[in-house]
Image (tube, rainbow, N blue to C red):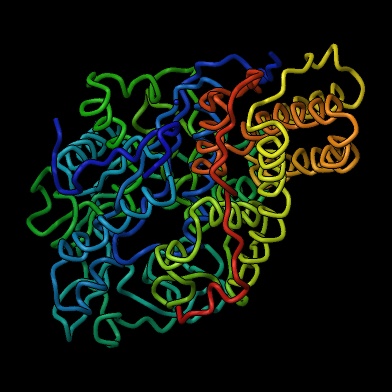
Length: 579
């Protein structure tokens, strides 16, 4: 189960409509509303480690930290039920799209629970609530003059006898020459496309060369929003360089109005029949509205106040962070902000800390290509915190990062266990052996002075350093800083050698071990966002509260009931099974 000190995974059924001594303070005032908006996964297959490292684990780490410093976090996401990959899979299997979503939405919920991803709400785009909010967004944009009707050409498969959504059209990217570009975006160079820009287009359904036919659609007038959007982007500070550079250049290259309807039979229904039957809101437009619709659903069903969502969306003091992969940068730095500007009165993103890709053997992890083992397969062999740690060390925050099964085992055994796990187990075992499991009563740090006081000052300083990195969404560096504190305590122990001094100076050994316990209590705070399961177990032993960002004093005389190591060392061949 998800650790009780983190918010539990609160989930709506995906098709239903349902009407968190020495202290280290937060580096800024607490209580700020923080929206943690996480990419909506297509419900067409189980996620792999690339998905987890790209969006879901970083978002959870960030949300857990902000809860600990006292901020009012709302972390939302859900299954994208209308994405073209779902209908593609349904067509391949000869089933309905709903059957695909019914199959994979519960898999997501199981993974979030077992991995400790602490959503306040994980819902879906199939709820009546989402349909209603999406239609309301369209209506507001229409009223404000940012939606228009236009004639356009859309590819039609003469063999299948149907219009083709953009992702049903494949071809060669006109910009980079990638031969498997989709009709909405080239996954290789990241450029957004229209299907008729592809060279040598072909139908994903039949392989036939599609025909362009006239059809009427509603368009989002991005061209009318470009100037205000660019002015906003150019004032952004602290964004990752690859994110802001891409977004600014994309807008400077010129925004084109983009169709927000398609001739489909699966998706959010269109609220009018002005253009005739068979029109649906296209997924690229309605999926990002999910952040708003999920917030409204949470307010009505979890908060008990249907208006509570406004705290995160209309409050100028609120912040909003969008955790996505780099293929989602266009939609979260350009399209969604443009929609919010056009709507008016809703908060724009504070930051879009989009991650790059995790690669396996040099290839990008991919559900469709079968690259990368499923998360549940890893959780059969690994403790959830061990897997979280291994992934957190390679979060692709600035560049693509590589990981492999041997690397995962090495990071768990040689870093997590050898450093932090062994520190905790060694100290607890010695207290149980030499002091009958009771924390010795020794003077406080100021009175102890010397190396003992210096160590705890280093822990407190390290905890502040970790907080500063968390605030900047530099999560890999934050984990590294936390592990460096642990390494310093290990070095302190090797210098003090309480296992030797206890034979000749019991009081000296007591001071060393008691100081180490207080240091461990501080390090546990720094590691709690990364390792929620094992730090909760440790907190129960120490009698400290890890829902707050401060090092608490473990009371002298407390019996430290130690059941054994936090982590299990892995056999080098633990993952040597077919993916």
